[in-house]
Image (cartoon, rainbow, N blue to C red; front, side, top):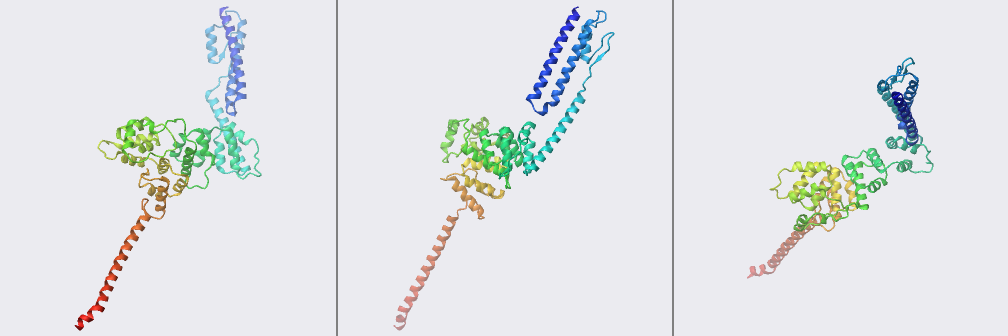
Length: 439
């Protein structure tokens, strides 16, 4: 009787578990998207299996004790997926092969992905969208993609059909997903991606407000860097409101007091990493060099430190560190650091991004930190003008013209003096020489 009671209790427990699985399967069908159809089928099959086991256990309760298997035997039979009772037809549960379940699920996924791809291609072709819109839609989840394409577009009077689609994408996807789409469709470099990862959600939104696709640009990464810089100016990161100089400590303020150079014009306020503070303290680096190091990734800073070696006898450690930084960062990253470090205006920034890589190198050659000037934007604009005219970035055309005109005026004065002396001598000859000859 004890075994029968235990088996009856076990059957009730199994029925309750079966009912719970059935309710879970219905909830999955309601709350989730098409990706969970395979999971729903698995849950329903498990519930059915438990129900069969419970019925089999109940059917064995009417037999006498000589024919009823022991509890251990029944549990072992349940574990094997089948239960055999004496003088009763053997009830066998179909074992579900894991490999067959996996293969069937993979086949369903492949079929669904093929259907989604065809739907995306049809949607792009129907509304005459650009191919990059299809790439963006492919990066969405099935539910998000369905929300975008299920409703017909009203584009009869729309000038930018791609923008209409992306506005729908914006309503159903978080900013993190759209930033991934932004980097994918524009094929941005790793430096830009690292820079985007440091922005706030509001700043990321500002970067994408100008358009998800960067059009008619030979260097999309440069344009993206320009957008990032503008977002940092308009939407500074207020997570750390303490001024930059107040966080540097007495040692750094003493370094600044020994230098007659200005404080970097940084628009964003951000915490100085501990490794940068330690490096500035150990090497006695200038404040603006710490600002450059702060804008590097952790891996880049570690690479710079590995390249430094012994710096105890170096007269200009800041110059050595900057030279190592130039060897590690990409040209676009270096130009973006140059723009942010000197607080350049939008006009000068746009002119810098329009230059060729060789011209940018010439502009940055005198130094990435513009010093001893009243207006950094004016000074950099002068550099750009000199480079475009084929001169060196720091050449002063007016000074050269002034020196040339001064040399010319001196030559003119000497010539006039000679002419005057010759005229005076000739006059003396005509006035005095005949008298001397006659006498």
